[in-house]
Image 1 (cartoon, rainbow, N blue to C red):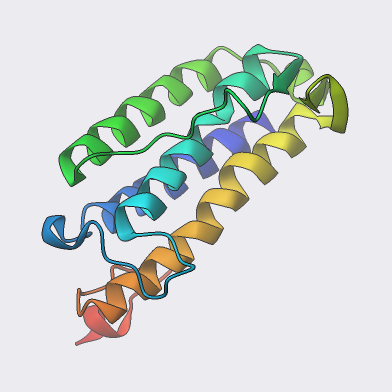
Image 2 (cartoon, helix red, strand yellow):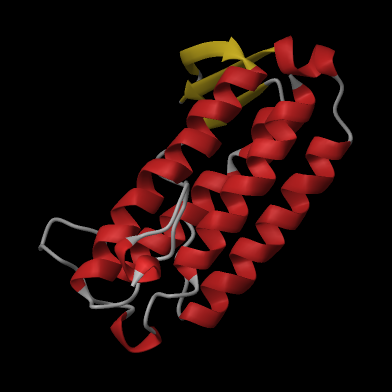
Length: 163
C-alpha cells in the first residue's frame, strides 16, 4: 500500500503543479462568483491540502483551535508555486521514511480537544490530502477555462491539447 500511495502522491502533485503554474499572475484575485475562492485563494487552499500530509504522518492527533488557525495565503503566483514545491518536497521526504505499519496507525482530528474523526493514517491522507487536492484541482481547471487559459490534462489530453 505504501508504494501505491507514494506513486499516487508523486503523480497527483505533478499534475496539480501544471495547473497551478497556469494561473495568470495578473488574475490572482479573480473569482468566478462572489462566494468562490479567488484564483490565488484556491491555489493557496490546494497548498493547504498538501500540508495535511505532515500532521497526518508525524502526529497521532491534531487538535485545531479555529481562533488561532491560519490558512496559507499566497501573495503572488511565485510565492504560491514556491510554497507548493516546498510542501511537496517535504511530503516526499516524510513518505520515504514511513513503513506499512504507520499507514494502519490511528490518526485523530480534534477541534478544541473534541475528537471529530478517527481513522487509519492512510485513509486520512487519502481524504485530507489526495482527494481534497484533486477536488480543488478540478475547480481550478474550470477557473482556467473561464479565464481562457489552456487547461492541461490530468488523466488524458484536454480539448486544448487535442487541438
